[in-house]
Image (cartoon, rainbow, N blue to C red; front, side, top):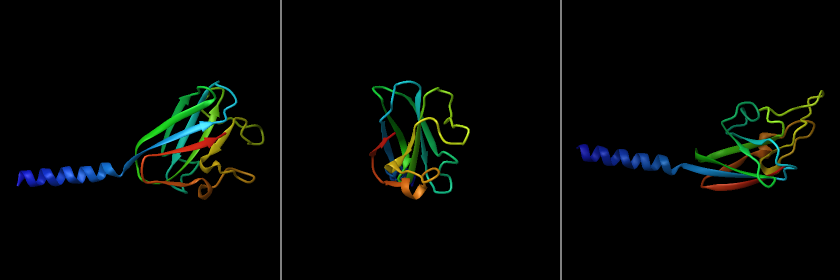
Length: 135
């Protein structure tokens, strides 16, 4: 009986781990190597640009950054990224609330008179994948 329970447990664990994937994000088009690039991963329309599901920060090399989100569940996501040139941990904005540091979203989605919409930035990951974003 113990062997059967162990086998069933191992089988269930292997199924659960098979649903996790790695997502590699390449951010290019940076104007310099100063500061850091912050990459935020969002897993729903309701949380997009409000509550980050996972985030990674990376130093810039050759005006490019490559980060990987490891072991995320397969599903629908969107990404928002920005170049934190002054390394203060936030996307700086001018007096009118317009970002003064470069930023972008997955699918190179653009907003009209505001940030991009989740529906324009979303993508599906069901296996190890790589996406590219240009600032």
